[in-house]
Image (cartoon, rainbow, N blue to C red):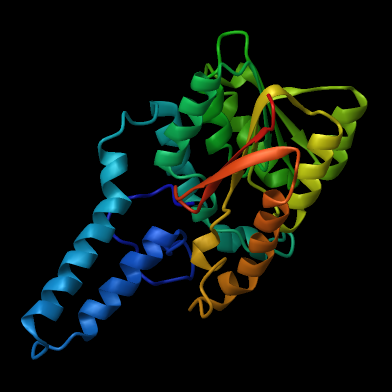
Length: 289
């Protein structure tokens, strides 16, 4: 998820440069490449359709954010600080384990506003997040909570847990947020033992574990009656349904996310809707609540 939603991102995938990370960004990238390879001798109707398609795709990527209310100054500052992190250095120093992170893994500015709006619209007072990263989503959701609201966010890696704690401590909203460090599976089991429940749960962590998070949450009633779950990255760049996705790394992850979507579709205790927002967000609620 990109924290930077300006002009179409370039194709670069190294260092701290922008990369395409959502279906809309990839679509803009594909159409930009198509325009560059469309000959001036091509029929005018072809060139017009290519230009119109690129204009439409770019607008779908940038217009919703431009017309929305905007994130808070604290959230914008956190987005900027996330963008400034040198993830290559963190990886080389062993602070991100065996996985090389990049700034686009944070929720983007539009998604931050959507999450805050979801908290307010559902009237949630207790929110759980699985997968903190630098804390952008958590901060926005906490800003949507009432004064007595609480948010618990779970992060596996010590660097990101401490990064988020340090930033939250500089904001008036930070007092609502508790960062728990460790395996999300273990932390969820701990919540289950304590019979904790939450009004809204946002899940944006290891995709291979999504099915386990779902089962523990439903089996242990960690989701409160009438509560809402949100799963992020459920379209996964488009690699969930494209047969020949051009990015090999993302193509490998697509089938796993698709399998989770099928598991969720066949889960009789819930109903869900997949929204084509950012990299795909699935809204889930228990049937009959």
